[in-house]
Length: 476
Ligand code: HEM
Image 1 (cartoon, rainbow, N blue to C red):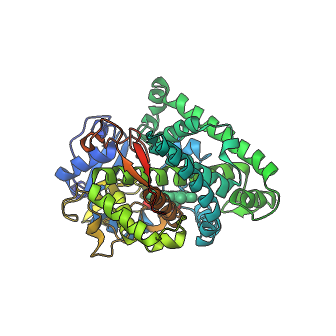
Image 2 (image 1 turned 90 degrees about the vertical axis):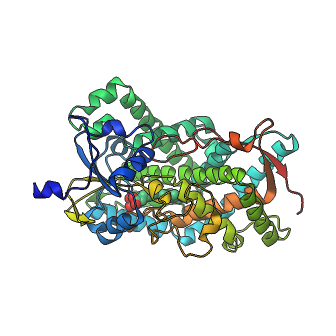
Image 3 (image 1 turned 45 degrees about the vertical axis):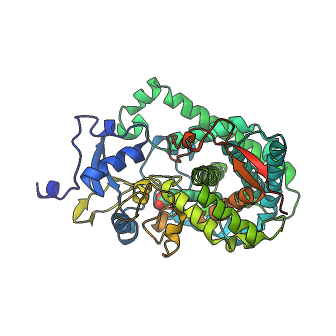
């Protein structure tokens, strides 16, 4: 009884399903609403699974910094298991020696500042193609589907940078790829019946068709990776070794990571992380940023003036230029505050008992940090629903995992290793779109018509695509 009393507050649930019915289609929003009544450390029984939800900066600091070592493993979830070839990746692997060695290797080889700078020519080339295609729409005064364009651009950059091949030569066209990515986010979001009823949940997934869809996504992605390897073999004629080249060499050399030799499935699992981690998140951020700027013309004007004054008629924005763009960086932080691409981060599993705010958290508990709720907490943020980049002028809150008020990349041992790559991609893409074009709403539409609906999944994107009409900026 004493232990029970020290369990975090919990909304009442039903037998068998517990609190599952309270999750809704967008769990980060439902959990945020519940936290207003039950507090920043909340206990839920999701089917069979004891779950704790963290919803404030202070409690996030306790979990991700002070007690990180007690809760830095990942739960066993069906979608991630299938898409990661049985947890051979970084993001969903449990906390063990294999994960430590793999993450260390990837941080040194793929996510390093050196590599991010080395792929700049690829980014330049792809952004230039995007500017040309948007300019064409501008001359016809035709709307551009920005959500689609941003995904296509990040896919092209990542395919070339990590795999050394052109995306256009692969089995997937943009539409199919976009659909595949959305499905994968959904399955990785872990809200399937098998994740809450480990013994019989698969029957529900089978009856609802979820299992079939999941298997199809795994097959499609597998075909995509296989083709990447083939194209890589044909395309890579010497030169700088790209990431796939490095992994294939390690496989050939029978390199041991953690408990065994690196195989083709290990490589595919890591590629899944790169695809899901790099592509969705950056494109989602730029789409939300453009959406918020269209709703806030003052901020749009200010950020465009900053970029245009700074660029002084230069035609190409470089990585160094974006370093000086202070207001642009604030716009991006404000976008991440309101729209963190992974609103519940990636779920963790508690390994040993610890306490938050005096409440006991037991081993095997599933732990979610609601970064979306933390970004809207009125105890931390004044007028939290408003888009106000200026709020970052007088403080040193950053998004790199040290400020627990703003956690788009998570924090602690499980922090996103792609922070630098993701941030530079977002800054570079957004700066170019704002520098080269002014933006108008399609005919007949007013600011109030812009919808802010979210799509469900691990990564939450804008549900409806963002269509805007570009007007070429001619000062340069
Ligand atoms: C705007 C860009 C990005 C955002 C917002 C983002 C966000 C996140 C978040 C929230 C997590 C979970 C952190 C946690 O559990 O505490 C994560 C993990 C991860 N991200 Fe990113 N990410 C971005 C870009 C990237 C890029 C560019 C890559 C790779 C090329 C990447 C690869 C990964 C990997 C491998 C993990 C798993 C880390 C682990 O479990 O140890 N991400 N990311």
